[in-house]
Image 1 (cartoon, helix red, strand yellow):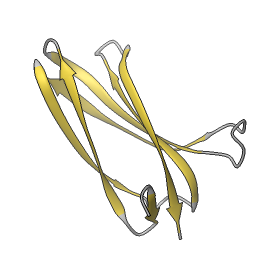
Image 2 (image 1 turned 30 degrees about the vertical axis):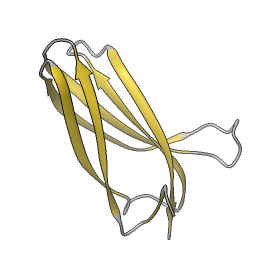
Image 3 (image 1 turned 60 degrees about the vertical axis):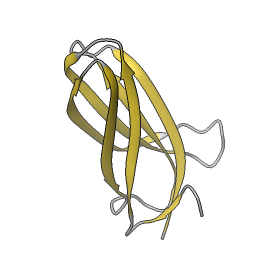
Length: 101
């Protein structure tokens, strides 16, 4: 099913970012939150990955392979944040998914 992955699978996270000007020394921060059973339940950070980021003016494409092996079965939300060199958040997007046994 769409949005569901077995723990032994991996997935490619792909996104595009349109930059008005070049950016050097930025950070791509990927956060994977485990979501509670209720919509009001707090989320827990399950995994965090940070990587250096260089942007050129115009369209920038990114691919990152994600492994789910260390995640327990359940509902998660992956959040991709682009940070400036001074750690100011420039853009953030998220997507929910399910990890099954």
